[in-house]
Image 1 (cartoon, helix red, strand yellow):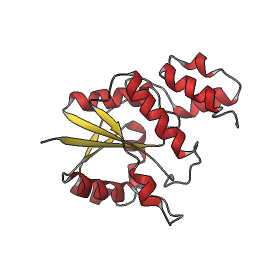
Image 2 (tube, helix red, strand yellow):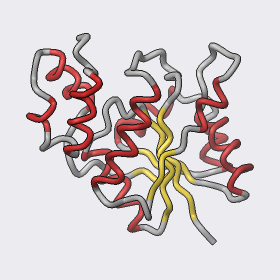
Image 3 (spheres, rainbow, N blue to C red):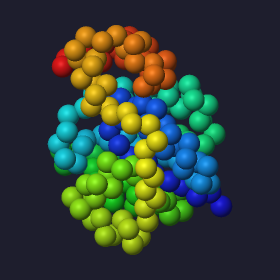
Image 4 (cartoon, rainbow, N blue to C red):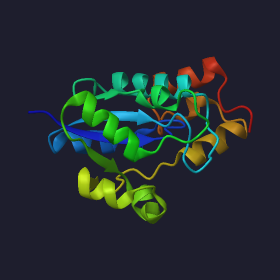
Length: 178
């Protein structure tokens, strides 16, 4: 039986730090479902959803992780007809129904540090569980966005992100608004 780990986040943009969590969860025997946030629960602004989904797809392809992980855009459907945020608990419940299996939540240290703020966190722990993995590559999306906003070329950030993601950012002119 397949064991699923749900890895949600803004992925704004996705980087090697995110991808190492995917690799490590896969090594633990999970199929990872990457779930970009459609609308951030804490009101954080992000690049358009379609771009973040595509960058995740490109990153998985570039790192040959398509057998271990896939991008899931379930939040788009859950967010329709509402301005409310989509909560992780609701995503996990919807995926549980769709997969006919109970997924576990995959989190990095940033989420572990803010866990007390999360909606229905006790229910998530009780009904789904969490696997918390430390980051092995200290890369932050915020710093990538700041560097791009300050005029850095996306190709200069290939140490942080796969080349196809850098090329996509350049082609779509993402993060130049900063």
